[in-house]
Structure formats: structure tokens, C-alpha cells
Length: 184
Image (cartoon, rainbow, N blue to C red; front, side, top):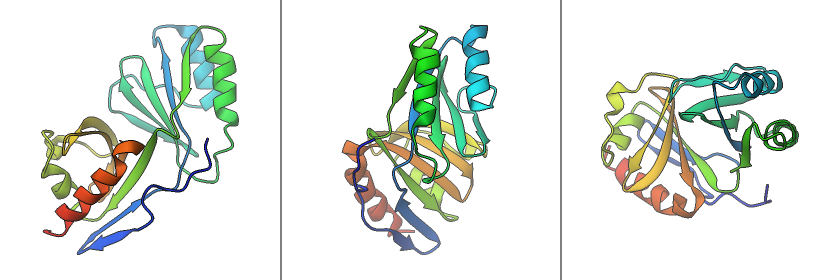
């Protein structure tokens, strides 16, 4: 992981909404065939979690969350900025990638995460997305467009939303969120 500063150095509060960029945390993309027992058993032993199959499901254990982002694809995110030693990446890479069971890619530097906390979080997202956020259950994820920017929405509950966005679009999205939040 590069030693970089967050792209947004401020947090904002609008009425009942608080927004900030989370500190850089470990983000890994994992790909492999879910029907390959060797792949699933090795990943399960390393992570201590059985890989979820349904797209959008979020499974958390300890300092990790695993999100199924597509068929045979998962996003592994650290839940804590203290657990970013990247030992996990090395173990997964040696076990999975080097044995041709799948692929492990570190995407930590490619994406940043915005945290939206408050009762109006979903209202802001609904202003410029084709997705109906009323249909998104708690502890679930969806990939969609927000103001024409590809994002992954991680919904913990109605008042705790994380937005995973490419670092190159983060400033644009942050400014749009600020403008939209002013009219709450």
C-alpha cells in the first residue's frame, strides 16, 4: 500500500448527516470458482469465513468483511485501520494465486471509502442514482451509478452507509455529496 493521504481532508455535517472519508484500509479483490472445493476450503481456512455466494451479501468476522461482488468474485475489506499489515494479502496470494486456484489483487490504493452516517443517507443517494435504495436490505451491498460515477454501496443499516469509489473520482463525488446534502 502506498503511504498516501486521504483525498478529502475534511468531514462535513449537514443537519442529521455526517460525511467523511475513511482512512486507507486493506481492500482485496478475490476471484475463484465457488464450485472448486480446493479454492473454497483454502480461502475458508485462511479467512475463517465461508465465502458467501449470493451477490451483495456481506459477511463480517473480526477485522474483516467479505462482500460478494459478482459470480466467483469477492471484495475483502478490513474493518479496522489497525489491521493493515498486509500479511493476509501475502498468505492469500501464496495459497490461491500461486497455485492457480484463483486471483488475489490488492486494490487498496485504487479505491477510497466515504462514510455517510445519519437518517438522510439514503435520501442523498436516491437523488442521482437509478437504484431504488428502499429495496436494499441491511448488511447488503450493491454496485450502481451515483451522479454517473461507478460506486459500491455498503449498507450496514439505514443510517450507516459506506461508498467505495475509485480514488480518481473521489473529489468529484465528494463535491456532489456536499452540494446534495445542503438541500436536506
